[in-house]
Length: 277
Image 1 (cartoon, rainbow, N blue to C red):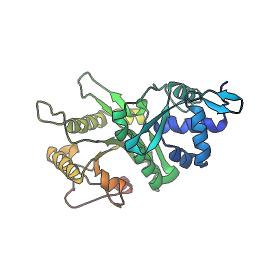
Image 2 (cartoon, one colour):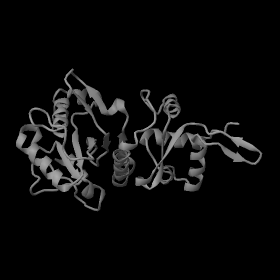
Image 3 (cartoon, rainbow, N blue to C red):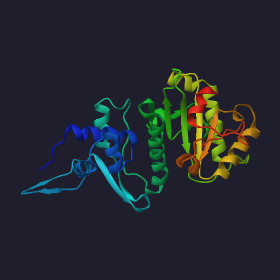
Image 4 (cartoon, helix red, strand yellow):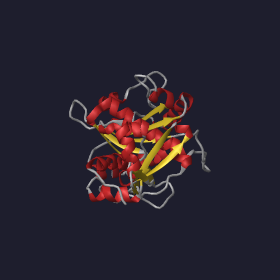
């Protein structure tokens, strides 16, 4: 016997298809509901059967569940059925593919979610963010680096009526995958972002004149080294177009966790500074 689907279940699916990977406690925070009731509905929306008196109800199969010990909590993410439902409800502009997640990528993916909650704390309902492939990916040529694929695109409504916009890259490792010219994958990403902007592709897609690129790397040393490399490249790279932070500064208590290639040796910034620069 299938369980009943409720309006509250639809609210859960809307958030999980937006954030992609959430805990029960995070869903409780997003919905304003009791974690106990959320946990009960997550069981219904999953795959497990539940015994209710003389009846056994089958899970509705909207959500996968994974227990990842390093995360210290159960994580819930959408099945294809959930993404199809979200598209039918008009919450997605395009269809999204859903499948089993790669366990090895969970630490990175959870950092993206953590950053989104960080943005909510900073900006409240002024923040608009998306992780959907159709928003964070674009391609313009046939070469391997003729594309962008960000972890997140977001903008917020500033007090002066502007909408500062950002692409986010969270890098869980040191620089790697150096090419024949000695450029790492991180440097090549930066080059692709500059080309994307200079070609006018961002402006065409998002109907906004400019965007900045945030790179968050594992350590303060890596952040400084990356800023130094971009500074030496000159032009658009040696500017405040690029915003660089490290895990401890960004996810800790630092009020100004970011540096830029232009002035990394003597200045630090908060995210709200950049619409004034």
